[in-house]
Image (tube, rainbow, N blue to C red; front, side):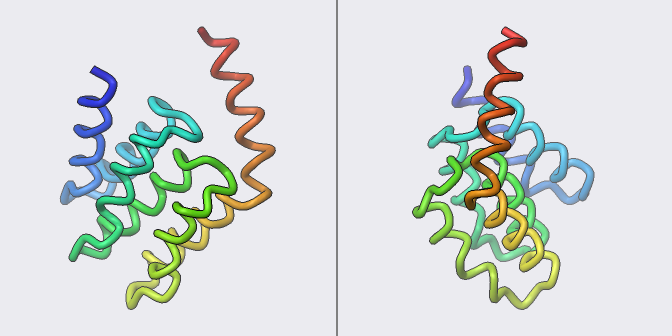
Length: 118
């Protein structure tokens, strides 16, 4: 069920409506949480999508689900830092910021909140 939900959210990253793409990216962060490899793979699979809006949504999702300091995810984001589209570049910079050392503290806090909610 979890994998199917992530795949469905991944498909929504490709939706025509910006609000749906945004909700899908946020949903991946809520459902999977930081450090989920499957969620990161779902997001990474769309980083080279032909539509800029999809690449931006995928970068946003990756910033929410990849483990802070994950060199592989940072490497996947790297080409988007020089994307022709400004929205994609901005999303990639923000995701890279979250995946850096700054994101590590937020990850710890988010995990504490998630555990209390269970």
